[in-house]
Length: 214
Image (cartoon, rainbow, N blue to C red):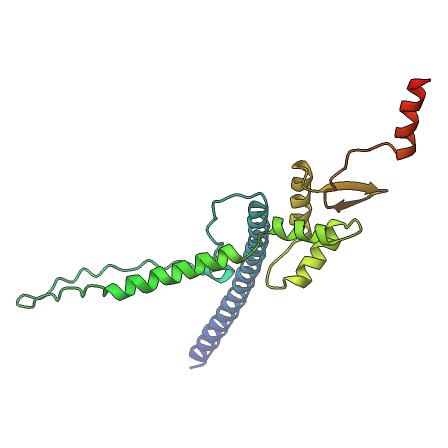
């Protein structure tokens, strides 16, 4: 009887230790997976920010092609579940119902929506136009940061980055659509000024023929 109690006690202690070890191992594995998920989320957010900057730069450079939108972080982090195909065959004696044709009104509605979207996109000025308009309205040179802040306040619905504004300004300077001046370590931009041909003063113009006759 005593030996049976000892064996039962040892067996209980063995299982208790094994369950505790399994729980500790499970907790460590969960913590490791959480760290990996957080790291992947940070990498995805960084890539999305770079994607936004690159898209703005592409629009600033006047590229016509529109890249596909970047997927959300939640969509990328979630594993894709394969869709199972329905291999069940229809039962004999039952007829499959034909698909209903789309009414012609649906295509007209889609065309109207597309036309409205194109009109709204055409009415929305590009970043190049906003920058050129802002420079024309200013009387003093402005830095890229000042221009970015002013445009962000005037157009809060747009994500205007200082880096993209600086690249756009340099492109305008290369096309002679803006002027670039440097004061110390700071760079300022102004609208291009049309230089009028220099004409000599009236007194000098009258004095030259007089000297020629002497």
